[in-house]
Image (cartoon, rainbow, N blue to C red; front, side):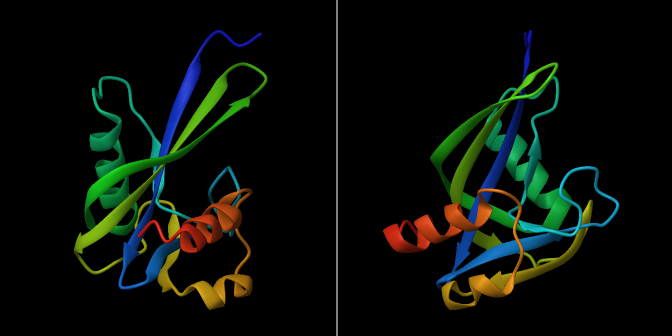
Length: 136
């Protein structure tokens, strides 16, 4: 049975009716080559999931975000540990999105183009729910 949890934070970044997505590098251990949203693991010593999220977004796509609001969670049991996934919604503030750490491509996605991309599990559903509920 799992003795500890890893915390993963990610965000739907909205700007003018579009959401920022990123294609994972083919070298990534988990879901290589699939599209997702920026985020990553909260590191030991970090004291805020929001600050961890901002750091991950800067490291992966080089943009600044604000108006960060909790959206949903998902808890997954792995063999040796559990993973708590926290998904937020945020607004784009500044920066030109770039494919940086673990990212092969980035783009601003319009809702009607979502079927053109292959996403990591639950990502497509999460994006569609956000568009439908007009949480932007």
